[in-house]
Length: 147
Image 1: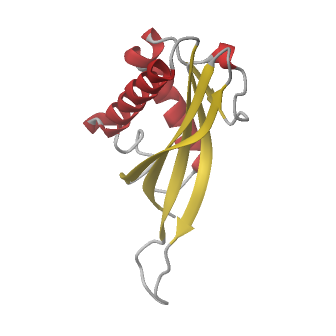
Image 2: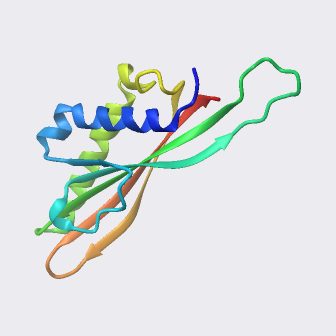
């Protein structure tokens, strides 16, 4: 299998857009777009390329180079109610994303990667003014690839 970042991104975009749980929750899914800053477009998922790490290879080795390709999924939720409502939405959405990418048929993203190797999650933006609660969570998916 060869490593093609654009194919990986396209497969992730198609996977997110075809998931009935995400579409029934009215998520707007984008690929390669800048971070959303409009609470009115939430819930929002932005798929972007992340870090790339490459492993070395011994001289004369016939095994392919390997590496790790990260897919960044920015997940945003908005609430005019309480902060706990927004946190609950963030956690529910994160669980949907993780469930989707870890299901057996999706682990290799249509054969574009070898395997899903790691998942991390962190809060990257919190906007709390008197009118709204707008949260952005980052889910990072680390995929093993062969070059």
